[in-house]
Amino acid sequence: MTATPVLRLAALTRVHGSGPTAVHALKGVDLSVHAGEFVAVMGPSGSGKSTLLTLAGGLDTATGGQVLVEGHDLGALSRARLAKIRRTSVGYVFQDYNLIPALTAAENIALPRELDGVAARTARREALAALDEIGLSELADRFPDEMSGGQQQRVAIARALVGERRLVLADEPTGALDSETGEAVLALLRRRCDEGAAVVLVTHESRYAAWADRVVFLRDGTIVDQTAAGSAETLLAGGGTR
Image 1 (tube, rainbow, N blue to C red):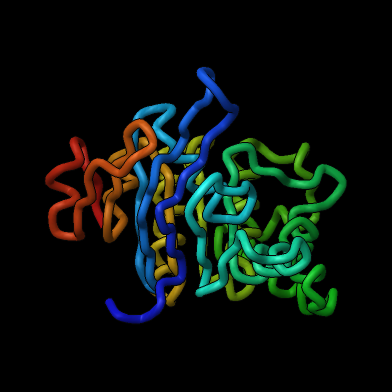
Image 2 (cartoon, rainbow, N blue to C red):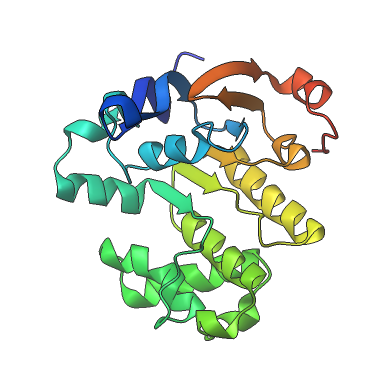
């Protein structure tokens, strides 16, 4: 691929703390993800998977190296410009949902669009369409505490996908879901990728990683292996189907 990647991590390093107790969460990671590419990130607990996503989404600051989203160096942006890119270009699915308790499902999904200046009526229409896409239209006016954990996670996924997000980052998005719903979520991420978004999925489930075009393996903060589309299912024990 020769086009500018949607996401580029260059010699990315993140160190927590200092001195003898410092934790090197990432150690010079290089990774590019292009439009229309689905990359799964796997590795044992503490390998740096979630740190990689928080840095890629501009939610944390690197100790060294660069994070570029559509050519923009996140570390060189003002706070306001960084916030705008996070709202308009990046969709982030958190492990703990991060829904606003005082807002309904539709309002949670519409909020990022309204913050970027989209008219409230248009933002709500987009939110309802996103809820319909994940099969939760009936929950539009329910609050998070009126939903199950799985329903909250699906609403969080809809929020991450609404609008023209060029980069979708998903941190264990199927953790609260049963197998059937988890597969439906992966199908949704796959479809958004096929429509032109770059998708990065952190997962410990090989059957979900098998939906990806490429699987990246992290250990102790470094990339130790990568598999391309044709070989991923062979290397992933108990792999899944596309």
